[in-house]
Length: 69
Image (tube, one colour):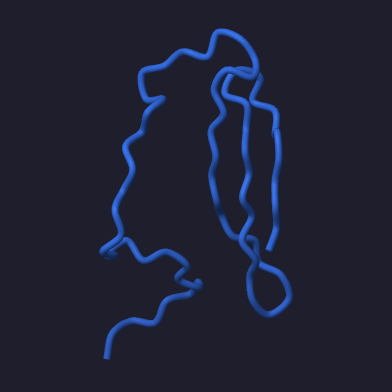
């Protein structure tokens, strides 16, 4: 029997889904509203967790939109 984790496992990195290339890897955001980046994380709530998705402007680093679900 292995060691028990202290946290909830939310990511399965060993999946068969296709990974998309990073199209903005070498791009420079010279002005607002040119490049938007997104990310997803989880937030503990009550007895479980919810996912938080955000869209951010790469130049100003302001949140352009978000959804918690």
